Length: 185
Image (tube, rainbow, N blue to C red; front, side):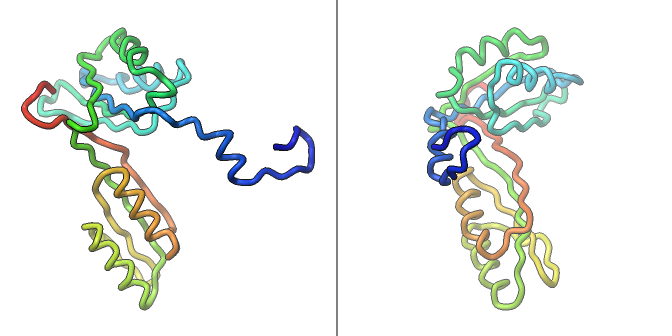
């Protein structure tokens, strides 16, 4: 790597080697909170103050309108899960926290892709969408919008497949997750 203010150029591999810190188990936290204004801000603020990086964050109502569930994912190598949960338990309005085990969890993500396609490429992109069990949700003369639901790996694989056609725009929700079986929520 070059020294500051030198003309040496960094290769992409050099840059990735210096910034790739992800090496631990991905943690999926399911956080049951009171459905009140400001709770999400306090949870996200706790992570920001501690210098934690949140990979995905989703929030939505539960079967009981008094409560919401926050699903949050982060890299366990960068920040130990016990440190995170201790800090979260201190927050008012946080009722229950579960670190979901990947093998006992169903996790899904929703993504929309706007892809530039014309002519014969349109049929090819639509066939890829069908293989991934996606849906075509909008069609114009020069583009299609595709909806994919599945694991993060499935969404990323679909992105790799359609990107060469001309990915105009992409939107992803982040993961939501629920534990398998009849266990506690």
